[in-house]
Image 1 (cartoon, rainbow, N blue to C red):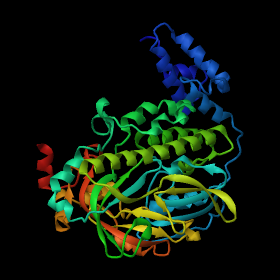
Image 2: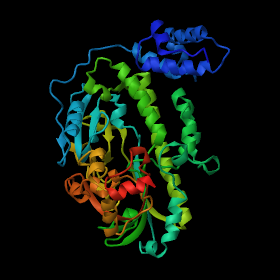
Image 3: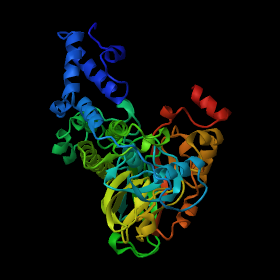
Image 4: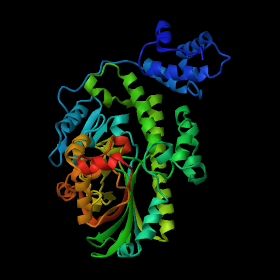
Length: 493
């Protein structure tokens, strides 16, 4: 097509490089699909949007471009970072230096009011994983994270865990035929005739924001699927550490349970990217090392749009878990006696320090007094059901897992599949996808028992669960796993 505009065309027309130009080029590409429009007509239409973006805010084609242009029109103020960071407490130790640096950066933001770092802390985008940050009337898209409302759901059954080794094939088939892991249409989405249904897909909020409307088809394809990385689905043996009347558990009792870890999939990732770009455009004077902490004022249209999108992504993430549990558990012929579900990678409006604040928990579990939560270990180490103790210094938070002592890349250079598989065999754990990456091996994580011991003033463990049969994504996206001759031979087949 000879009617496709380029970045040079837009620069010559006075457009500035950045997120706005990216949105303009995307709209121009869509317009170019109609061969009846020439380059001049397409450029003229883009210029009309630039002159009056408010008129196109709800336009299905120009909505994203209009939102980014409107963000540029917001009042500009010099970004005055704090001379001294807010005081925050750190739980645990053995952090990579960049983790502490990211938390310190967040503590210098002018909107920051309180914070904490959990013992599973490790580097993330903007706010570190395990970081908790309370801000005044503002939300940080990367403070919430890429996988919005990622969560744990644990279903407890009446049966003893002894049923699994006795009927291994039954449980293996229930898991492998009713789950999808990974990204892309082949691994991470259902075929048309397999797609799940849930009321969340009919929620009118999908149509309230043009950007969300464009995510709906992706949501339909990915509902009831899991992601890559540390997302999993597993059968596990649960042991009650004390009486837990809410869950119908008596101290010492053992039950079979089913545990999943996943989030809002591609929908959440797209929301994070889109509104982080909007936030960065709204704060162009932020120094480079703070740009991923760019925030949206909740009094602005962009801030309200992100808040709506985040809430919807949270409900979509919960629907993912509901459908996974329903289909897998039905295939296994079981009935749920009780369940626990909690999420992280989210922002809550809560009262702290005598005021209403927006609390970001990036890889941190809500742990208000009496609240039940699930904190997993590794694919071959004990995880826990916990009850929150409501520690004000942690902003009522705890860890969301074991955390990493080193980067994924470093773990891949240190750990082989042979070492991982030997660890699993020693503990009697079956990994249904041996192509799962070694950066998810138990050796790639901190010791879960030690992490739990570092936060006994935040939560109390009331039950423990040990994985028996685990399903995760393959490692293909992340470049293979481990080193060693045996691993190389496997990759050449």
